Length: 61
Image (cartoon, rainbow, N blue to C red; front, side, top):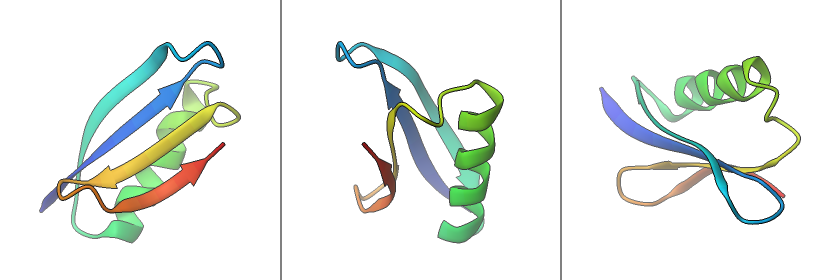
């Protein structure tokens, strides 16, 4: 299992969510991250998902 970090931002730059996700693969982490964002009504906000090395997995602006 690897760790991924999901962050969403308000247009003002305020961090709205900053969560660590544990997943078996990048694809599973991406699906989990998208689910969390939709659940918290943050999917339309700027967000990113990166792995522990900093590789960008998901980005929306």
